[in-house]
Length: 267
Image (cartoon, rainbow, N blue to C red; front, side, top):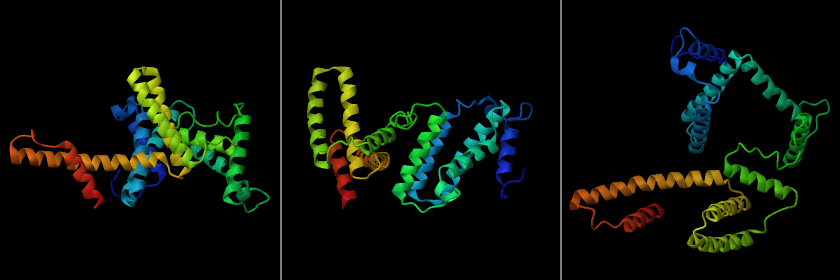
């Protein structure tokens, strides 16, 4: 196949089929299973999220392609097992969107506010689970496969929608500070199980605080990771320059260097 030409989805499906060919395929691709590809799906999803955060259209299209490739890979493996194919994946997605948007695709079309749409969406999802014989509890509906930060926020939102909310903003801050002081005592006692639980409670409180401020905790920590990474690069550059100039890092002050980097950024 020639490179550099525009290709429809069917070409990508054929490429994957070729890569998985038992006689002429790529050995690495042939050895992959639906489970062995899980880390790659997660990695590509996060790389796409990072590209979206940067707003780089070229990088976004590239990462979308990488994620699409993982979907095509899974579809090919499933097709080989006689489970489903790409057409079925697309059909199910289309059917779901039509089913969950009766105000657009139904016989009686009606305009709805965003809030009304959310309520309708959740009702339809609940009915879908009931039809499958699944537990109808809204807390069971919060997907355990979600990243823990996102699941915590969804659990809190679900509890809030049912009338169980966790105080106002100032109360959350006060409670978090009290928990932090109590956690300090727990650390001194050295109780491993309670330490682990304490860290979890503090994280849960901070996620709730972010929710109250209408912030996504995942995006918050992603931004801090970027800042920390940038500061680390600058820190080690400063330290290396100091060592080259003085022949040693004995008199180097890590705290002063770190604070100077933060001040420079704030300035």
